[in-house]
Every structure is written in C-alpha cells, then in structure tokens.
Length: 408
Image (cartoon, rainbow, N blue to C red; front, side, top):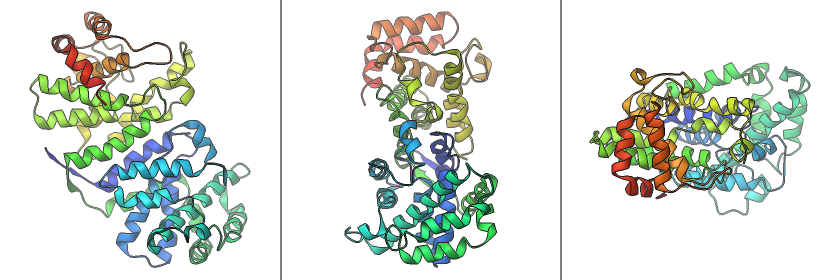
C-alpha cells in the first residue's frame, strides 16, 4: 500500500465544506462553531494539542447529519431526539483511526453540563464536548437573530443572555465566563462573517504541516464522508462503496499501477460528495424529475470537484471524481468535456457509477440483472458516451464486476 502526503487539517477543512452543503442555509456552521469554541478555549489557556482536538471535533461536530429534514431541526435551540445525530457522528469518528480521539467530543456535544457529571468521562473530554455545545448554540442563536438583522451587534446582548441564563445547567460555569469575556468585543461578532471565519480556519491549516498517511488510514477518513453521502437515502446506501470497489477492480484488470488503483478507490468513495446539497426528496422520488429538479441534481459533480480540488496531494482524485458524469461525446455535465479532455481513470469511474447504480434498487425501478446492465452499458458505448474498451472489460468479467459492485 502507498503512502500519501496530506495535510490532515486541510483535508478535514475541505471535507467539512461538504457538511456545509446539507441544508445549504447554514453555510460555514461548523467553521463558526470551531472559531467560537477555540476562542473560549484559548481564553481558558488550554494547551495546543487539546485545542487542536477541539477544533477538529468542532468543525466536524454535525457529521452525523446528512438528511436535509434532520438538518432543518438543527436551527432549533433544543429538540426531541437531538442526540441521535451525536450517536451517528460518534460512530463515524470511531470508524476512522485518525478521528477516533474526537469520538466522545462529537458524541456528547449536545449533553447538558449538569447531566454530563454522571458520565464516566475524563474532565477534559466533558469540558471539550461542552465547549462545542456552547459554541454550537451561540451560532444557532446567531442564525435565528439574522432573520431580524444582518448585524449581529444588535443581537449580541440577547445571545449572551441566552447563554448566561444556562450557566451551570447547560454549560460549564467557567466556559460561560470565558465566552462572556471574549464575546464582549465587537470584533468577536464581526469575525463570524463568512469571509473572516474562513480566514480564521485557514490560519489553522497554515500552522499545520503535511504528513505521510498510509493508504488504509486515508481510505478510512474518506469512508467517513462517503458514508455520510450514502446515508442520505436508503436507495443510495453503499453506492459509493460499490463504485469504489468496482473502479479499483477495473483498474486492476487494465494493469494500472497499484497507486493508481488506490486513487481510483478514493475517487469512487468521494464521487458523490456534492450530493449532500441535493434535497432528500429528489433522491427518493419515484417519478421523473422536473427540469428544475434535474438542474439541482446536475450540480453535484461540480460541488464534488470544488470541494476536493483544494486538498493538496489528491488533485487527480478530485478530477476523476468530478468528471464522473462527463461523457465521451461531450453530452455529459457539468463542463461538457469530450474524450480528449476526460482521463482514462475518470472514464472508469463513470462506467463503474452507471453499473453500480443499475445494480441497486432505486425508488423508480428494481435492481437490474447483470445481462440487462451490460446491454445498457453497451448501448451507451455504441452511442459514444462511455469508453467502449471499459465496457468490453466489464463484459469479459461480468459476474465478478456484479459481485464486486454489490459486495459491500
């Protein structure tokens, strides 16, 4: 297995952009929560390593939310069953060795301070989780106040009062005191504006260095986000895993280098990242999409590329994933690129995506048997949309391709 030189902070920052797509209206919520939590923790004098874990957990704290319906509830100050997304997020963190240390912070980021005392957790963990909770509720209050004014200075006293009234119950008293001090300045509230909070997080990236990450570790990180995407609909569950497995298998049949095959797997896992913006009801619609609905769906490959292109070391993965709906004859989207502009690896992802989707049940049809899938792929190859050599390779290994695509 290969090693990849990746800035982990940069990867987490870029992939958190995908979380911003869910619900769309809460753009940069995770980044604002990270900023607020970090400012409180810095004021409290927390050491660098503890700050870093806090920042990573804060920026990813809502990773357990992929459905737009559930995301809409996040704007409520408190709601029934709010702990469910905390459990889902913690499970995702546990699945990745690089993120396991953040699991408890995500798991308990909606736990009231006076209830956390009964938990068998270190004090530092309880404080970090509660710091994220406080920061999260501050930002949710800010979003609610923006309905009356875009200038948070007019609402800051009301927001500060909301937090202070829950001192000792919802929030640890010392954290509340630190928040009250750091939020007393106008600059704190101005920094919550999108361009400034993005700059704040960018400095966090700048202060970190690329590190050698084994492919297995990088894949486990990438799988966290593919699972978030696939969880949007019961009909797409495990789609990304299937595309990744089939793309890697096809790369191996073409004798591509082991590193290229690993990158194909990563691209397959990430190819639908932009679908987090697509409303759940469109993915589960059992009839033809309207022109407007189809336009909403079409932007997902553009969003995928826009998010991934900023991760240094994964530029090819970003391109292959972003081109998965381009077609050889230029009829695809979002750029209408043609054969000379579409890499062979992108063509593999495209064919694997079509194959796996046809092999899964969708709300508008049942899963198709291998022979019917092959006939559709051959038709698309004959019309100049898919690469004929890749379709021929699928035909030569049809039973195995079908097994690999559904093995997960």
